[in-house]
Image (cartoon, rainbow, N blue to C red):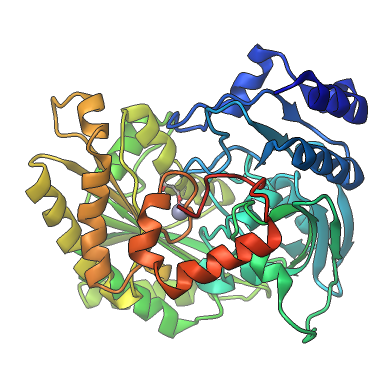
Length: 470
Ligand code: MLT
Ligand code: ZN
């Protein structure tokens, strides 16, 4: 890169807005899973949308690729620049203001660099809830969760991130700004542009702010942790909970025994809240916007009926906020526990909800046939048919040898997913890791249309190059 664009960026962004020291760039250059390490010549940290737009214009003119980055928590290398030295990281960290909150509209207007946790807290302070929750919410930012259309723990009740967005502000690849921050519940005026940017992983433009839907804060909440004999029982119990009260069922998370044992081993201050370990567990949350007397008792009745039917072997209800948090930690620390345990190959797949048990039987068999002794960590959002089906090497296999076979392992899992009519990426996106799967899974008309969109929104290919599209 010639000195000129960097000098121009320095003049535009000032000393707080540009990082060029190699040592300071390192944390932005690598993804948290250490799958990729890029070589960006600079990290841009604009102070506001206008500065960001001007910086994008400069980069586009200089032919520099732009890699938007929020909390850098991508599971698929979606926010990591390439090794070619021609892509800068665009950090949204300084765009982190709450612009407006309206508890009557039930809407929150917030900038993209705010963490999801900060957005949740802002909503809570106003007696509302932002009904989006993921394990990495303390670091993940609004721009990131919207650009990846994050799912998470409440999708079965409130939908994915894209279902919670009323309006967007976006900086386009040529530096123009689309002011789409409308907070309308109804607006049928042509193509729904916001949905095109949501889930586009920063390849079509940079989301700089959003209007998000809120719901009233829950006044009653019950969190239960149950042991189950098999995946079929887990599905039957999910169905029972939905029939009991679909409006109150807020989360239904599945955990297999191996993942749970990793959490108990590697995460401090964790303990199984049941007397005996089991092969399968579920964490279930019910909530209500009313302080309903007897709310917990009705959940107890549902669980008692599930026990009678053999769907649940043992169960416990959180008796305090602290206990509820401890139960959620067992689920949310799965990714971290796996990381501490060593190498893993991740699959974030979905199948129709009714076929999850079939998947949970067929996928381990397919992996074992490929690599005897391979260890399965299966957990996730059973309520959405979204299982994180992660694999660890057989005892004694070198991690590098295991990781070298990642495509084979992913392909074995995806073979089962395909037979069941599922998707190879339910919520983590495509990023850099899974672009190679796109032609096989989304080829033909679908990929043609995606390429046409890319050409229309980013004809020079400056926005997050090498992601999503092969
Ligand atoms: C989760 O739900 O905890 C994640 O999406 C994690 C993962 O796949 O490891
Ligand atoms: Zn997940």
